[in-house]
Length: 170
Image 1 (cartoon, helix red, strand yellow):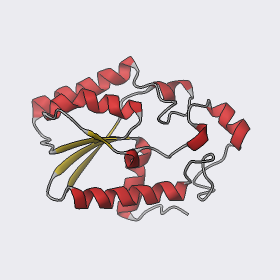
Image 2 (cartoon, rainbow, N blue to C red):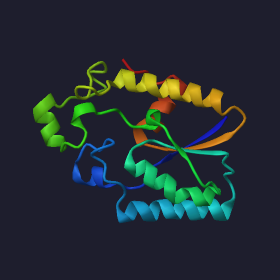
Image 3 (cartoon, rainbow, N blue to C red):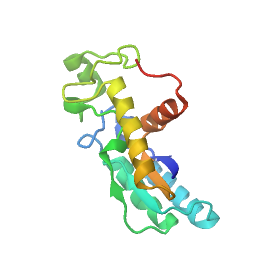
Image 4 (cartoon, helix red, strand yellow):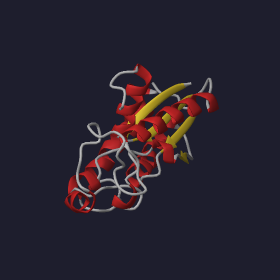
């Protein structure tokens, strides 16, 4: 499998300090839509990527990015994969960062890799394990195919850590 990871465009959640999981994310900003459109146009004009499959995380900013770039890949539909999401934030989804800190005690996930982000959420270690598992599953499921996956910076960084065996979590 050839896997191309695409980070979603600029999003409202990052701009306003909201923890943007499936509920808290309100999608892309106008700038993010322009970024995704520029990628779509580049993909269509260059022909450098001939994708067999387009996937997206279930988070609205990634779904919206995938919707915009799909025509540039000549793909009409795509699947949504929860395993391509950033760290699952559990009960903190939709909270402002300051409120998360008050409710759950802000902390550094790398320094405390087994602590969950919030109840019903993930830890740094469980997030990396999920990313490892999705990479293995996609490699088996799409053997010999080219997959473009719209995801999040954290997933891209975790993928690199997992694949290169560097900066291994906890």
